[in-house]
Length: 79
Image 1 (cartoon, rainbow, N blue to C red):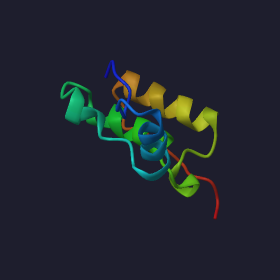
Image 2 (cartoon, one colour):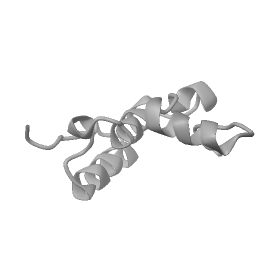
Image 3 (cartoon, rainbow, N blue to C red):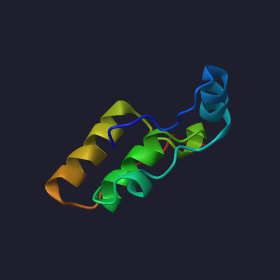
Image 4 (spheres, rainbow, N blue to C red):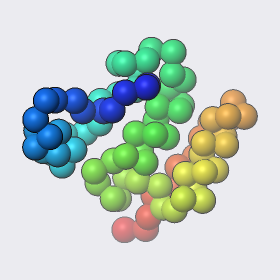
């Protein structure tokens, strides 16, 4: 998107937002971002570890899928 997910003059406010808020959807800032790319990025930035990709290899494969125009598959860690 070309900008940080959270902005504020007070760095403590920015830190608090990073800790407590979900990252805003990329398409709210850059509507031309493909929905599949947004989904993969948001999964990787999830506050809940169970919703994040199981590994960097899984994240990389999902990004490769997006690049090729395929539907990305993001597996999460086993419960």
